[in-house]
Image (tube, rainbow, N blue to C red; front, side, top):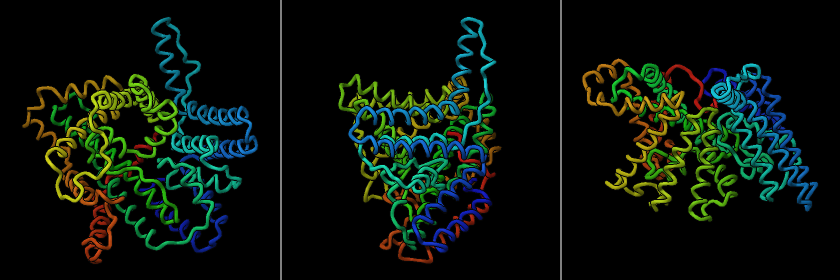
Length: 489
């Protein structure tokens, strides 16, 4: 079920009413969450409900076994390793089997003339499998490492794995944050619910007005990129940069806001990444739930930054190769991950200042010249990475960048004529509005979080005018309904 669908607009109020007004008991609410989440997920294909149920059950039982074998190190290691292997095996079969067989077939065919057509299978990728698999893995690892006590409540655990707002595209929640919220009573908080609706509205605007309209122009440019001028290709790359941000962060805003309607707080997943002053800062602000997961469960166990420089660089490349593979079974994703791993290694080796944790230009309306330059070149590096990410093959990515850097970049008359045919002026205006709003609210959790002491917070007419304009813009200028990009991961 898509957030941006008529079905969801009917589904959400029904679940909300049943959740708060039929029974206030925690056990009943958790049961409703599980049922609603399975309906939500099964809307695509009910057969995959068996898969998420099996993943949930294995992880739940692993927690009980880890508790039972407390003090028996080898037994606990076997249980933890067993559950990790089961979950990763399921993920690899559904997500990477075709990729592995196709590449092995190409290798053996080229070297020995042997083909593996007989083992090729057209395996469908279940929506969100990478997200809920990582969420299940984190539970077992946290219990094994005594960061969390295993739960005996199977309903609350199933609710943790399948909670529908963040089930198919995150944020990837940790059991240490989300599970305890299903273990305690929840009361309706009007202010929290209202702020959740605001965040959902902002997410719908970014997804439906910006991302979906960017997609139209981006798809046209990529479909015939070999015949486009360098300037058109550059515009296409920049548009995709905003498309993927507004698509994915828009989903996260809707998910986080929706969860707040049910008294649940999800972790922040985006922190205005295109205002970053370095690539390391960019990755502290983009898809935070995944980058922190990889940091805590792969980078730190490998030694993190506490090793010598050679091992630190090794750790970075391992993590970013995994990050690339997590995003998809294609060499473009692997190279995209290694591209960012290389950038991070360069920052590390050069000793550049990457400790930008504070809000950029805090207390000032405009950034300094240095901050503006840092944000511009960081954005440019991100754009190059998104070209690799968007391409269907490595040769497409290379040819696209070659075309973008060709002499046709200076062919303004042809470029303007072709850009005019794409008709993305309204989309460009919406991007500008989004950037201004997020810049002004860069110290807030989301762009529509208004404090009581601010101008908008003090004037109810201004607030409702903003809501009205965003709602009308979403209804009037929404692009064609499309799935969220990260559903494929």
